[in-house]
Amino acid sequence: MPSSLSTQVDTHIARTALFLLFALVLSACTTVPDGINPVSPFDIDRYLGKWYEIARLDHSFERGLTDVSANYRPKPDGSVEVVNRGYDIKKGAWREAVGRAIFIGERTRGSLKVSFFGPFYGGYHVAELDRQHYRWALVVGPNRDYVWILSRDKVLAPDIRQQLVTKAKQLGLDTERLIWVEHTRDDIAASAKAP
Image (cartoon, rainbow, N blue to C red; front, side, top):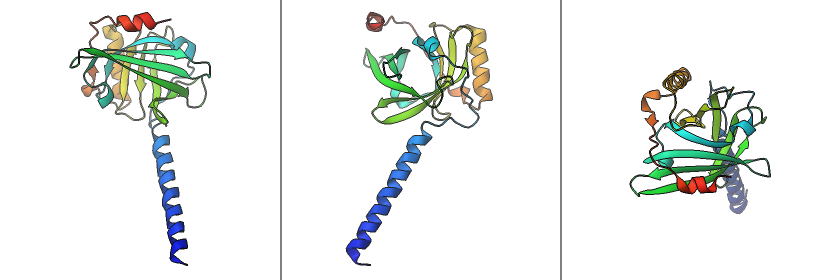
């Protein structure tokens, strides 16, 4: 085989392998972690609106934030706009990130993928939910390093909090590392934007 043809074949193989690896990494970020069963039936219309972050595992994009909330709004294309806001204590200012969520599979299953960074999506799986009133939820990300306890209120009743921590432990989540989020500030800018 001539060397230029050999180089072209090698380059093609390398590109194909890189593409497949990239595709595998992206799909791994949106698959449901083993042992996590997203809530079903799930009603996105009831899930929309504002949620307060009660607890989370530490990760770089929320590090140092208090008063964190997420607001979910329907988009005309069937996706969901996600607006996360939190107060950065070091900077003395509110930070906001706007993303897009789309369902992974059926819309009646609480399993979505969310992107805040262009084409890169991460899993968002509702593992436990107040199915009667949609007042609280336990969410697991693309793996067990991403966990959130959410509530419609800034404070979660102690019995519900314990119920969610117990469920998280049963799912193999590291509840000892949970950060309990303070909510002491009013987010006037977010209130002004609310529909």
